[in-house]
Image 1 (cartoon, rainbow, N blue to C red):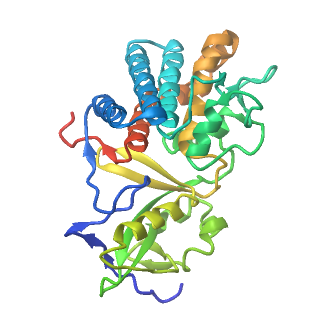
Image 2 (tube, rainbow, N blue to C red):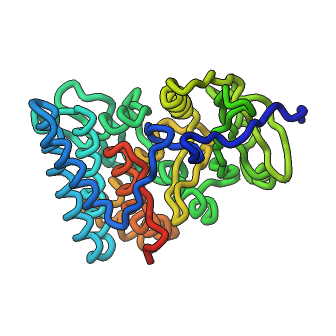
Length: 358
């Protein structure tokens, strides 16, 4: 490997360390620690509605209505068992999505709405993804578009393929043999925001553990948009580092603008986020999925919720087979992750679990 380029030092603004974020925030924006994201979400949406006028006020008011529906479905799901739990959880997540796209200015309620997803006739364990409809609004299309990964065509995806693109589920899919001989596509990464020693230039470091190379298709790390963005790897102390090629000129006036531009650039690198008790962890999808990982979460939960309503025979097959483990894992993990992630996207502030929560 090449000799190490200048790796700089951790970036700091107003004496606080600047961290990488997967949503657009100010460089020195503090995280919101909340054990009850519902209360924070409702308070935010009410305040925004009261401070807005016209169409914007309608959108925020609708968003709060959908958020209330979502909370009710979540509460109902917490006391339900399989397969009903999957249906209630999906509708909770669907209404969170409707709240999110409403905040982004998508006017729902004004025309016919479709899930944008369906179970293909005559095929099991698959979901059809509708492209933009000629009339009405597709909730999935609007959601995927707002996440930066719009649908480009009508397609069909296996539910296991969707789960393999969700960081919470990809490990169990591999352990149960659903990925065949493929190596794991997700590699855990750290993304550090750095400055030059004189604090005049801003850049980033993407790194991973050297030991993770064996279980992933690491040759793909410099594929696609990442190829022209990062320098060749440098190995130090058991980690491999890729520094961004370009450094951004810093001044006291442009700090937040430069930082936000870097966050936008990372949106095209197939970085997935996973909330843990110690904050968000990041994973790089080396297979460069078609959709954002939250869109795949909605696909997986649509399947869990819809197959329970319309295909009892298919549910029976799942409950007696190895796919049951993936279904139960999805229903146990995805709704709570989705709640924190969507709350962060809606409020444009990173929401995390407090250390004090037991």
